Amino acid sequence: METAVWSALADPNRRAILHLLLEGPRPVGELVEACGLSQPGTSKHLRVLREAGLVRVVPDAQRRLYVLEPAPMAELDAWLAPYRRLWNSSLDALGRRLDAGDEEQGDDDPGTAPETDEQKDADQP
Image 1 (tube, rainbow, N blue to C red):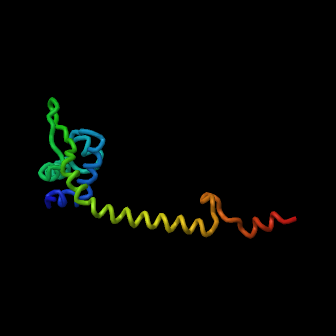
Image 2: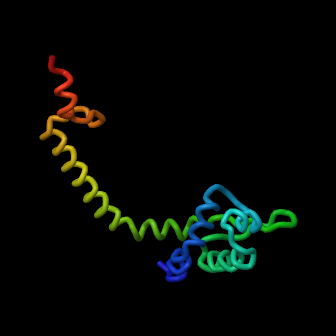
Image 3: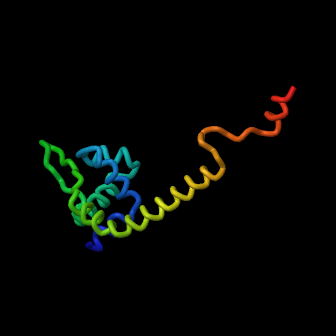
């Protein structure tokens, strides 16, 4: 995994731009408006993303569209795979523990709150 990808992803504005590009290609003007950054600032972020290989430019008549490049994200996903297994096994264990706690309490309907003392008193004649 190249350090340029990590550096590019470290900035929250660049992550926001990538998130916007998930919806499809966009011209710089739309990215400026959506991110609330200046045009020069957005262009600098796009240059970093382009140099890291995370986006590419596609000419469209008189404008340039920025498109998400999936290959570096696939590399990142592959790098994270062994760690994801650790997270998933921990989350699975937590889920089993929570399920076991529900069974011990005899709570078959997790959406039902236990009856309060006031409700018990109201039920008695």
